Amino acid sequence: MARRDAPQPYQYVRQPLVEPDWRRLPGWREVTAAQWRDAQWQRSHCVQGERQLRQVFGPLLTDRFYDELAADQREFATMSVLVPPQMLNTMAAGAPLVPAAFTEAFLADPVRRYMLPVRSDRLPAWPSHPLAARDSLHEAQMWVVEGLTHRYPTKVLAELLSTCPQYCGHCTRMDLVGRSTPQVAKARLVLRPADREEQMLDYLKRTPSVRDVVVSGGDLANVPWPRLESFLLRLLELGSVRDVRLASKAVVGLPQHWLQPKVLAGVERVARLAARRSVNLAVHTHANHAASVTPLVAEAARALLDAGVRDVRNQGVLMRGVNDSPRALLDLCFALQGEANVLPYYFYLCDVIPNAEHWRLPLAAAQRLQEAILGYLPGYATPRLVADVPHVGKRWVHQAVGYDRVRGVSYWTKNYRTGLEPRGGEGPDGLGRRYPYVDPVDTLPPEGRAWWAERAGAARNFDLSELEESE
Image (cartoon, rainbow, N blue to C red; front, side):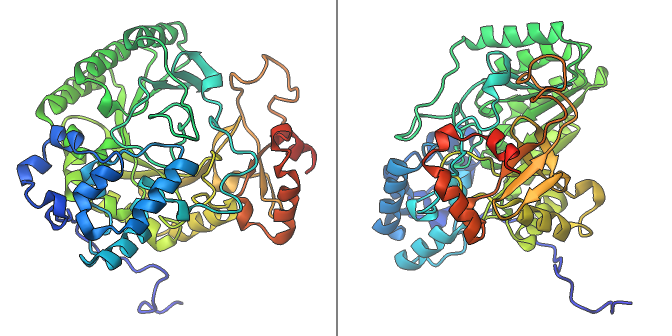
């Protein structure tokens, strides 16, 4: 029997949430608590590039950082810069207020790594996987009307808009969301919002097999509340809809939005109707590191729960240098579950999108992480680590049916058809197929890296089916 006083691999110590003092930064020294809590102040002071960063940080960030940021925007970035003060304030919160030391801490900061990527973050040899794709999950190919992805038999994703209050560098919808960058001319929604929503509701009326609707974007915090409430009330009138999930990174990145009285009053009206109709109404948010979970985040989550939302849940992304250790992941989960009333739900492997290889973890690392976090959290609050496999969907990281660790190719099966396959049959795109998913090339042994290097130049003529055939 193990000694009770033997050290555990992870030692839980309750950590109270902290709102870093924004007044430590030169540009915010005169900002009052009332201004900081004001959603409009937060929006109007979002950082969108070097000029605004210099206004906030003054001499604390040296030209070394700005040069790296500008180079990344020119050469690699798939998302333009947009960071709310709330999120920016969580970066390098305890760093010395001395330029060289602060810049070093800022560059090392895990929240900065995914919100403000710089060129030195990227992998020189393999910034992108040879099979990286702008819409890596083929969501637009599964639109049944503009913005409505019908991927799973009983679930749909409704993208109401293509903007957010913050732009994460690793965004899975980088093909559509945000402003264009030198690397990515963004796709565009073309219908008027009212027409798009009308077509979505009409499809759902005609498709009673859909019981679960994820309402997303972009981010719902950027939808004017009266318009969003009208859509949700109409959605709840459909007797076939039993689950509604509202997706908003702003619970973490701009909690001030969800603390506005007019918004909370609207959430309460929607929640009351959902309760009368026995529909499960939940909010999903996006936190990737414990530092981003602050008292204001907890206050916003509590307010949403008090307004009648069944759950506030977190869907994070596993990223190197951010949350890829058991300690970092468990610290985040305990901050969410124990201090902020946010349920740790999913953590996804970062999708195979362009210039994301420095964030992505190999499947084996995710499997080890899943095993490492078991036993510490309550079972219902232990997040599932998942791979979102193209042509398949979400799969727990231990569900791979095969794994070539030399080439970094795992294989997956599915138990339903999607709109990407022809109707009927068990043909090459049917349920009998094994679908491949790829690890980052730089994590492979020399033999695997060489195998991919041989094919990198011909990537446009090399697709996933060839991986399956070569297994």
